[in-house]
Length: 251
Image (cartoon, rainbow, N blue to C red; front, top):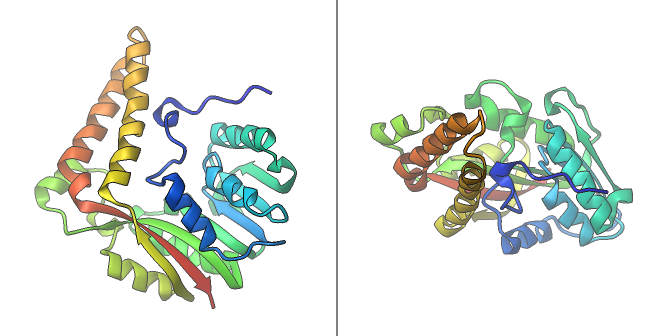
C-alpha cells in the first residue's frame, strides 16, 4: 500500500498542533488504564495521537472521525503499517452530524471547531458534546487555545480571523470546562518553544512547496496565505495565544 502524502502544510509535522512526543506520551498516560477500553478521537486529523494511544494498550480499540478524507486515508495507511488497523476505525465525516455511543476515553485536541457554528461558541459546543460522548467515570483529553494575556488592538488587527471572544484566559477556560460536568485531573500548557517548533514546521511546508512549484497556477495564492500566516504569528499570536491540555474526568 502506498501511504498518502501529508498535505504540504503539515508534511513536516507529526501532529496537527503544538504537541511533541513527550507531551503526547504524558497526555496518553493521563487517560489512566485503557485495558479493554474504547477510545474515540473527534477531529482526529491523521489520527496520530489515537494510534499512539492504541499502541500503548493492545487490548484497547479506537474510533476516529475527521472531515478531511486525505487525513483519514493517511491515518488508515499508518494504522496498517504500524499494526492496530484491526482495532481502529477511521471515518471521514462531519462530526456535527455524527452521534456516537459514550466512550471510556475521548480525545479532542485543537478541534473544537468540528461541531461548527459561530467561532465564539466553539468551546461551548465542544464541551457540551464531550459531556455526552464520555461515559460517567470516563476521561477526556481536551486541548484548546487560550489568551495568555488580552491582545492589543494592533495585535487583534494582525489576526482578523480570530474574534476576541473566541478564547478565554486559562483560569476561565478551566472553570468553563468543569461547569460541563467534569473534574480536572491534569492541566498542562504548551511552551513558547513548542509553539515555535510546530509553527516552524508548519511554515516549512509552505516554503518548500513554493521553492518546488514556482510555475504553479496556485503559487501566488499559496505565497499570500503563507505571508498572512507569518504576519499573524509574528505580530499577534506569538505573544498572546497559549495552548492548554486538560484531562477531564466525567462525573
